Image 1 (tube, rainbow over the protein chains, first blue to last red):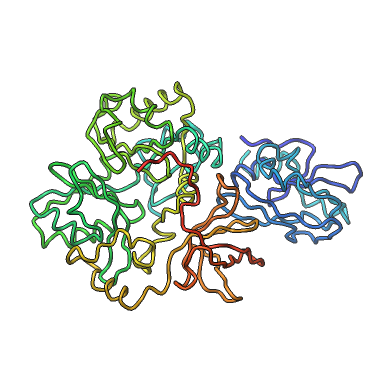
Image 2: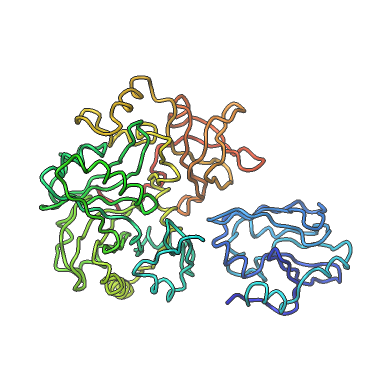
Length: 129
Length: 370
């Protein structure tokens, strides 16, 4: 059974948004379910700090042994920070997806866009909880 | 409606271990267990792994013309195979395209062909179609035969306490009848990983018993890990072993696919020989080669190989090598670009990653001793 912590927001693309130090700042990564489906992550390609992405625009790619997947920006946002540790140790996404395996820190442009996301209960039913 | 997937006799063991089951060649097979592909890969390189390869096809051939028949349908010289020996070979269409790559076993009273699961039905139809002209009995024993592959530097020390057969007496690509954990079968010193190891052919009904006995013995000795198709692929790629359906197919001949060493054009007539002789005389235009990526990137089946800004070839298999930490691939390039050291590129989405042609194996630290 995959881990789906309370208090995070989830997307249909199996990404999570974890509230950061300010109301419009979030850490984004992929869920425990997603890392389990992907298997061992080999590389992750992340954007430049300062770049902006539209909702559902690909901001990077994740290479697992079996397949490569695009990473979609869950909301229109600016990249504040990327997790440089993933360059050296992409397996952090497998071992600690909600902690050390975070990918990008974003500033959400319009928090109303977050209404399309799910809470833990809704996401849990999406992935067959 | 899609045909229901078949289960190997070890299906319940995979489920109990938390294996991730995927459709493969009509079977539901474990691609990995919870420890993950990289961990399983390293287990085989450093200790041992146990693979369920029951999906492979086994054909038994008997009769006075069995050897003549095998000579007719395969490219290698089966007359050189002694009783107790195994030979890697291939079957070709009349036009030289590869139908399948396979192993030929010679026992005292019969021969056995071990074919890829994905090709089994096609192979059976082909072999049956040509068997009519020979005094030979052909039996498809695939469903009754289970196959477990124990691979890794510790394979022999795990297996030896379970059998009265002296494993030291079985050389590479040799086999012997024997009993393992009370199960009668064939102990074959073969594999697809680049490590020392054994493939155990046993009755399907005894597969679970043998699996449990091996896992028990391996756990005591330490380090035996159940291993899935995922690491089987990365292990074979580090050795540069070709995989049918990826690197080998009916569109390519053995001379193009790096299998010239098993193609004995002077052994006498065989299916595909005329086309292969003609191709050799005309010159081989493209070749399957190994490529090592010089920068970060994950090469995958179908990615273009480029040189001088042109698309010149294609990747047929690729992986980021867990042992080397860089991308390695097999693929077809024009013969003039096939020499080791030649610089090419692999296009990965919008980037061209520099790559160098390298003669496999990519990984040379294996415990396999020929």
